[in-house]
Every structure is written in structure tokens, then in C-alpha cells.
Image (tube, rainbow, N blue to C red; front, top):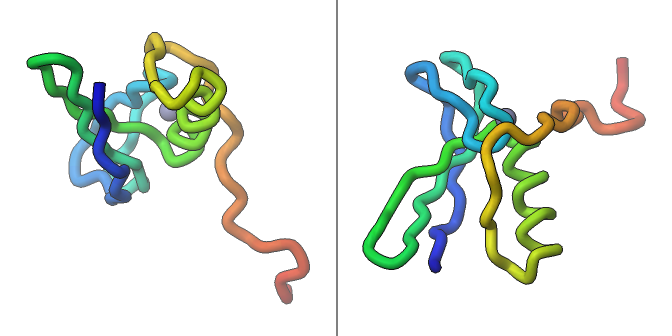
Length: 86
Ligand SMILES: [Zn+2]
């Protein structure tokens, strides 16, 4: 099993998140990587926060990211750094 490094894109069309199964809307940021298992390849697309959750999950599982879609979507990543000026 092998996965490529994730790249970050802005959605040009609507996708379904492979982690939480919710929609990734046009214009939303998402993370994408390719996943190879045996002779099969697939493209994974996730919300950035879902990608983080999947990474944590993979880490706990020993580096492999085998999961079932329909996981709980984590809260969105905070984009504002604490202490930012108003
Ligand atoms: Zn998601």
C-alpha cells in the first residue's frame, strides 16, 4: 500500500469528502492524494480538517490509512492565529 503526498487545492467542482462523506463545495479548500493498493489506485479528497483527522488515524494505526468513509467531521481548522490584531 502506498499513498502520495497530499496536495491542497480549491475545489473547482463539488466533491464528496472521503472521510466524512459531506460535500466539498466549489471554492472550498480540500486535500487530495492518490492511494495505491495492489493494482488499484484511487484518488482521495478530503476537507483539510478531515485530512488531519485521517493523518492522526493513520499514525495511530502504524502509518496506514485504512478507514471507512462516514467518519465524524472534525471542527474546521482555525485560520486566525491567537493574538491576531482586530
Ligand atoms: Zn470531510
